[in-house]
Length: 204
Image 1 (cartoon, rainbow, N blue to C red):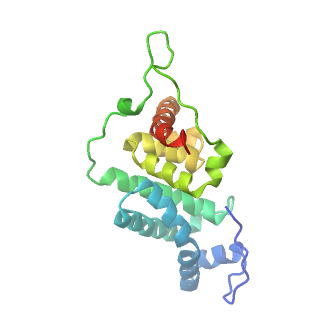
Image 2 (cartoon, rainbow, N blue to C red; image 1 turned 90 degrees about the horizontal axis):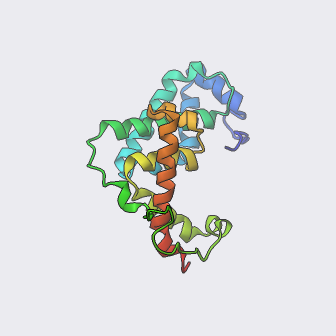
Image 3 (cartoon, rainbow, N blue to C red; image 1 turned 90 degrees about the vertical axis):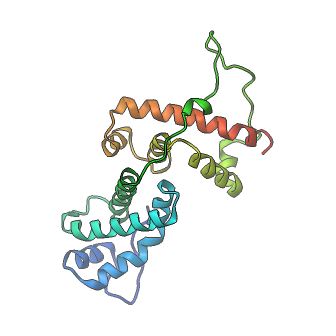
């Protein structure tokens, strides 16, 4: 996350000054927080919530939560990192409270193996490397699309670990799972994502 160091006309030149303004209840500080961080944090919410209104609602809930708890912010991390965690939690809460659709089994997306443990059929080779994929906008969009096709419980683990860069222990805490369950879901989610991407990557 980038540092908050933008010289502007308002009094909050540094992140420390912005935090001080927030903790003193300065309305201008709250306005600055929303203006500077809403775009990035909405992108985070959208990764978890496919409906735009859900993402907007989660972002609003996150800012309200941040306003209420800003006095407990001690500056041990960047403000953006602290806010990012709140947005993730608000997005996960939104997922839990909305009516869930039945998930399709992830087994249908996993590669099939024969009795000797080898993959059933030839494993397709990708025509791109990981570095190429990361730098290609179309491929990035394809990956995002295929992640959205994963069953929600697996998609969430993959997003937290591989996209939001949370540790296994942090992911287990926010999802109320054991670390072992997180590792198992992540492994299966990665396998399923690769299977979804295989037909597209062979000729990429």
